[in-house]
Structure formats: C-alpha cells, structure tokens
Amino acid sequence: MNEEEIRSLCAAEGLKVAEIQQMDAILVVVPESLEDLPDFDTLAGISEHICAHSDYKFVTLGIDGVVFGDAALKPHHAQEALP
Image (cartoon, rainbow, N blue to C red; front, side, top):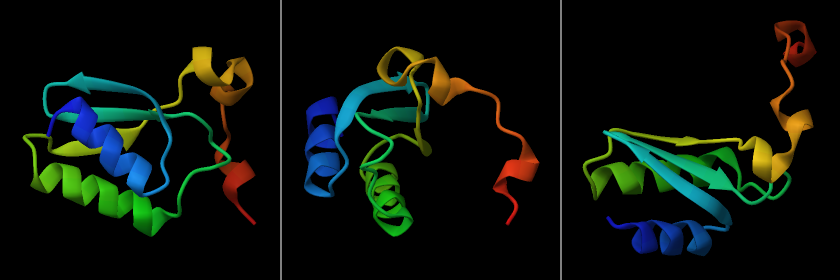
C-alpha cells in the first residue's frame, strides 16, 4: 500500500491522519486528534488490513509534540491507569 491508499483507508474508517512515518517494517500513523480516535476494534482492523496488504509488520499510532503540544507528551504513571 502506498501513502495515499493508507490515508484513504484511515479516512474511510474515521481516522483523520496528520502524518504518516515509516521505518523499515513499522508504519506510524499520527492522528489529527486524540479525542476523535475510532474505537479499538476499528483501529485494529485498519492495522490488520495494512499489514495484510503491504510489507509492514507493525502499525502503531504516534503522538507528535508539534501536533498535540507538550502536554500530550507528559510522562504517565502506571497508577494513573488503575481504577
């Protein structure tokens, strides 16, 4: 899959893409907004489709400090994730 095909697939599934980065067998998709992410099953489906139709072995979301600002990149503690 080329970048335009990946962007089209993501858009069709409701994932607005700000940037796509590639490194060997890893594809990093930087979303336009963290608040508007599709649900986990949709994201997993996008990943599976890209891996099945390309040479990528891994697809991941990236958070870019330029796009989201420094607050998005703050360190998170494991205790914050516990109920």
